[in-house]
Image (cartoon, rainbow, N blue to C red):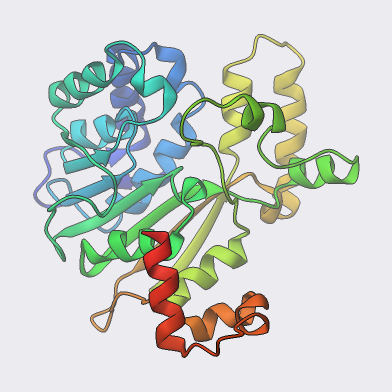
Length: 310
């Protein structure tokens, strides 16, 4: 249990209040209450990380917010929240779903902007907290994504990432039995339009190392079982809750077995965006030097690679 009371708030933010607000948002959500099933645990975890340091009224930016379900809870708890998402997932594009998302965001007090990360005129060094929940695993350019996310934080502000743990127990079991732990090959094969599913699921060590590249401070990782909670909540099986209980007891022996990581990090006053580097790239891509037959300089190679990727 947790309870956070700030001098400027009328009511404490505790688990009971979060549960009440979550239930309100679930009833109002335009795509059915089942969308939020199994998300209460993660909601409590993230809000406890925010509320422990930032009172209601603090500025929060959510990048890749999707339909703004979590953002609605934060708004109802008194936070000033801006959300951005390009709304280009396949289901976002169906019928009037984009308009439904925008209307819901407006109704719950979320300042929503339909845009991709880094493509807006949002102010830099403005927000107390920047959220990226279930986002970075979909991104093919994590360096640029983190550059954009951190640039919006005030000095001393908090970045909060929620993303799958790539080496959770179920993934390890799948591999042990010769099954893939990656996104379904059938889904990839039959996908229509831009592929929007997981590109890379990170281990806690990998994600921490990327934040260290960005010189982020006070990096902390909390491991939870979001995936298990969602599976149980969305299933009619009477057996599954018992299996999930056993799974959770096993993952209590080693939190690294849990399926989701929540990572927080602080922006230092010395922070600067991380630029592309052929020096770093050649350490992980052997062909850069092996086939540089024209003996291009690092500057020339960088120019060629950047122009080709634009």
